Image (cartoon, rainbow, N blue to C red; front, side):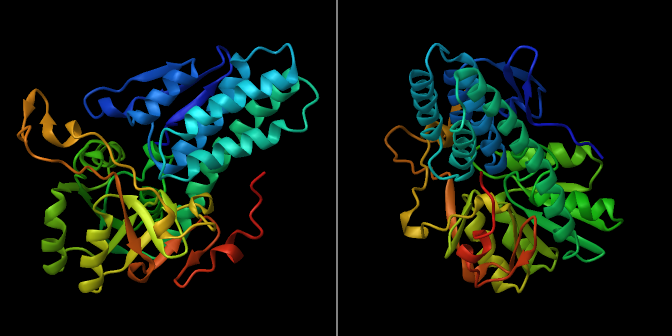
Length: 347
């Protein structure tokens, strides 16, 4: 089964390399990123996307800033890196992993006595975070695979696969691990309007791995559930508070339908996605440009006079969640996030 890296640090030319996801499935292109401005643009444009991948991108971004910054004096050097970290933080307000990755690398630089040591520490920590993410996804996959029947059809929304992580994936990691264990899993991939991450990315990943995948319009999911054609729903998460799971817009709709039809609704996410300091009402839901909704190709489908609301995420109340699959255990609500994270080393 394929396990291609989504983004990685290139030590030879001190740059970040990543798969440009907006071009898939028609074009497979690797971008070599050598500036913070280019990385920020890549994150805003969803060339790099997915909560765990954003955590790795944030970590690599601080390392890149450290490489590029003037190394004459430690205080001005750290100030420059902090400024770049602020630029990266501002790119995506909802996903918590981005800031998590940035802060871990910044913390690793604090004990350094000079600029070169701080730079080396930043690169080492960023590489460590990427390795941890891959190991984390495999652990999530192992825990989640045990929850799926030996023969089943799983519905997923958006892309929580290798492309959303350093490799393997969270929701798709569960599916990959189940298939690797010999289970017969078919996947229903919701297309995920308006940017079609389910159709473009999830279907591409699974088809490449030889896993049975069928893409549907988002509004078809409830029909299939009512017909008894879905055995489980498995999705990823961009942030988990004590009362809600934040994921790609449309996730809440699937959770409501799954609850009505008594279908298990699983969330696959690492502990780095948990937010112990906020509740649903405190989280900013990212809104994106109208052109993502109004234009397809060269044609406009919505009149200029019509208003557009383009939310990138929604919140699913915890009472609709059957279980959250993490790298250490399967959690069933109610979940004590503070207790869960109390022994989690984030340095």
